[in-house]
Image (tube, rainbow, N blue to C red; front, side):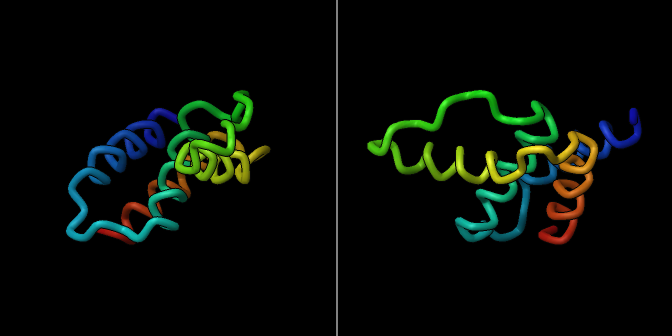
Amino acid sequence: MPDLKAAFDKAMLDSKNLSERPDNATLLKIYALYKQGSSGDIADKKPGFGDMVAGAKWDAWNSLQGTSKEDAMQQYIDLIESLS
């Protein structure tokens, strides 16, 4: 696990220096995998309809419900590496 955590932290830093800005769908996936990998299943209620960005983020994270932190970390690492 320490190696996975270190790779996850490195990928998080690498995500800030991507050569191109990913499309919105990919950005949501990056966000959701990061949140699932760092915090686990979402516990917050879905934001109101008035905040569409927060709602999209919530939906993306919620779609990973039940994914283990370790699996989410690895998927996050793989995604960032594929974008680098």
